[in-house]
Picture 1: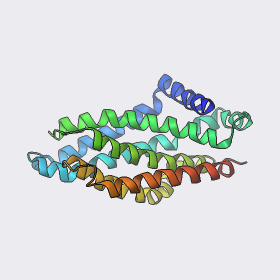
Picture 2: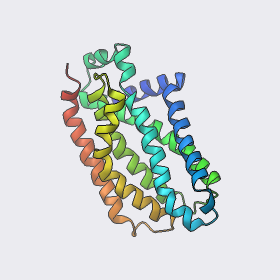
Picture 3: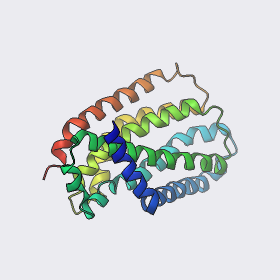
Picture 4: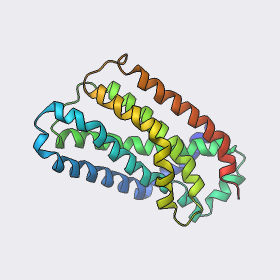
Length: 224
């Protein structure tokens, strides 16, 4: 556990020092929100209309911003020769994967925490309760990052990794995106946890299954 946190802390310290990837993710996410707020301007006067478009707008911003971050997850390690150093460290390959995933989850949560207030302001919308929408977004983010971190390692040695990663990632995260969008819409509309229990179970099962599968296959993904 300590080694997992060390790997995650290393990535986060490097990112917070340069902010190269984080700034790109935040700017892209905010750009999506601004564009949609202008496009949907005529219907933003009604909270019901906003609740209809909010889940799609938010998750489009999260997914595409996250794809930018995930595409760079292993690039810095490769460019600086640190990936070989990580392989030589006395830690399991699963610990390397988990540390990377934890760092990516933290970065995505930061982007989401910045994006949601901007969405509330631009769409003139008041979120009643934060716990349930936050829980849904967190579970969806974990599932997205679990798959994305694995695929980022898989495509890091390819020349077209920036193009290849979204092509591979988006079809695989559809099982988490569909219940996440549906549950987010219901949570924003005032639904209780019991009303979206099926979606929450799907998200939780997806997260656990893909996290365990990724840990098992990551060793073969980063082999020379």
